[in-house]
Amino acid sequence: MRVPNSPFEYVFSYLAPSALKREVANKLGYSDERAVLLTPSGTAANLVVLNLLRQLGKDRLRIVLPAYFQVPVAAKDIGFEVTCDHAQGGDSGWTAPDLSALDPQIDVVWITHPIYGIGDTFSPGTMQALLAYMAAGGLVVGDECLCTVGSEVGRQLGRHVGFIGTYSPHKSVCMNGVKLGVVIAAPRHLEALENLSDIWAGPLTRMSLADAEHFLSPNFDEMQLAVEARLIASEASLRDICKRFDCTLLGTKGPYRTLRVNGVPRNLELSLSYVSQLIYYTGTSFIPSFVNLGPPDLPFSFRVNLTRWGTPMEAALNRLLGTIRSNSVPLIHE
Image (cartoon, helix red, strand yellow):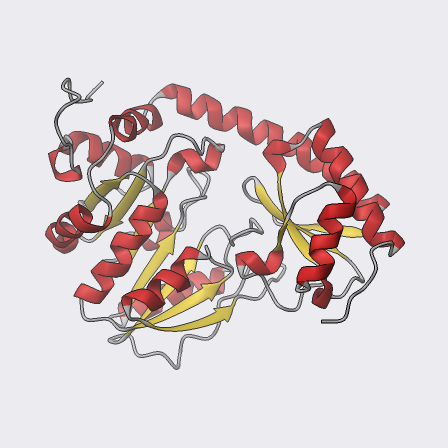
């Protein structure tokens, strides 16, 4: 393994072997020469990219929702003028908001793929709109930290110099305790990325470099196949529960999906007192859709992790959905 022998030395991305970084980029779908930055996590990768955009003189960020909650918060703290608009689901994928009113020289478009907390992809029309936006001189950032390897939008958009992608491959196989973040951008951004990484990401751990090696190994591919098989089985079982309680499971990609409780108004999801009592009465915990900046037109919804499927999760869902359907939690008007 290409991991430094000494545990006493700092290792930054610019000291990591070039061949290692190139192989990581190749496995993520980039065949052309690209600037590759390794970071300790996907969160750090996103933070470095936000600061790169500011260094490039950009001050307006258009975030296509749903998105990782860190992004709009950090962007505002860094000084961006942030506008958030929801993508809309459809039969051919999710459609991003109209980009025609944006100025490619000023506005940066930030997308999250797969659709965060739902697990779906963008429509062909949106992909063409993003390509056209970059052709006009715009920048598009793709947060693909939860993306299954092989299905990245960077494989279609990444050939353009206007695309910047962030990745965290082990998150797609739910190995959240071992992290590697990756930024891939046009070669002209390499020096700026490496300088910013010193400030916003810090040095790599030996685990990060070991993760890079593991990502390139056949064992990672075997793990991905095993996870995908588990997701298929878990989804089938979860759909049975959805039928029982008149719910809809959204999404087709990855471990994180959204469970929509049909007919239950969203204002209950936004009610702190209702959700608190629901958790107390059922002994369950869940992440409401609005926390992931989910679509506002959904009824009461929450995120589920298909890799956690088993007897405890099945029992928790039965208690949770049974309590919601029985209206046994007293309503408190806020």
